[in-house]
Image 1: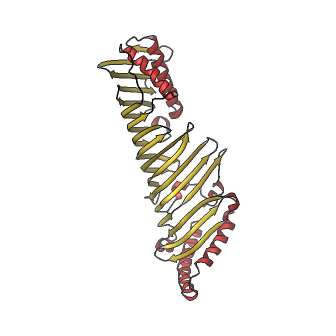
Image 2: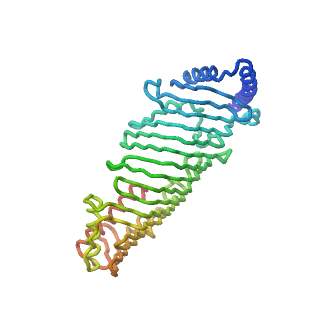
Image 3: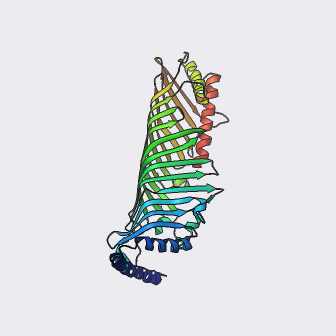
Length: 400
């Protein structure tokens, strides 16, 4: 198998050199054969992929590699079903020295003005047939990937996930994927742009910037660290000025060995004061909270929060969330939560408003919870379900 790979790579190197020379010779003699080469390339690729491919022109340079303009790939089997991918320009650079040594390596792949239309229904994706064209290997793509850098400029991605009912539209996307290791899957991802989707019957939009390191082993993704920044977020009439998240994830998916940490901070939240399920839930919680402090809840029209932050860690099968802080124009709230191995489920809340303070802690199991200090029945009816719901949510998501 290795001998065949080296023969193939050496042949490809010779082909690139010879093809490049032939391309230059013919272009000079006939005034450019970009259209003819593009047509031949499209016909060959279409037979292989089982889809239609259109390329307006192709050019080649031994230094810059292969450049294709106005590229488009159909849905299977033809453009009558729609466009799966298109790009204004695609450039593929293949260093000749690795080819001569028997290795096929893409120095870089660049896509300008790219468009992707991704669909999923009942677990089937509209690019599954293209994955079958990848080299047959027992290793995952994250280990056999050998492109040093993959770049997208001005891209747009539309995704329709019919099984979950989610549609996503990502525009003005600038992205770069860098591969650092010749022996494993160590990647750096940077991306920015705008995203929009429908959530709860309302339109959600915002700008984002992302940087992440991804480290793979033969078993899959092992660790990740990165940060996400979002701004100008809108969900219907609700707005959030900014959201920042930093994470470090080690031993991903390895049960008790997992070691995760997350920090989250959001600023400038606004929700209009008209009647909604969100405001009804908030009013109910505030009524119980202010009752415990011996005062009436403030009359609110619009809802504003200056800052929200939280820190979370999962280690040894136990989840701890502390540093949860909420600062609003009518009250401040601090809370912590813990659940999982090595202890019971704990929820602690401290609130302050109108010059008064309130503190409560719930621990123990669900059958016989311990509440400190003793609280009114109405407040217990808020705290105990809140603790149980948080426990059920994280137990389902994190398997703790």
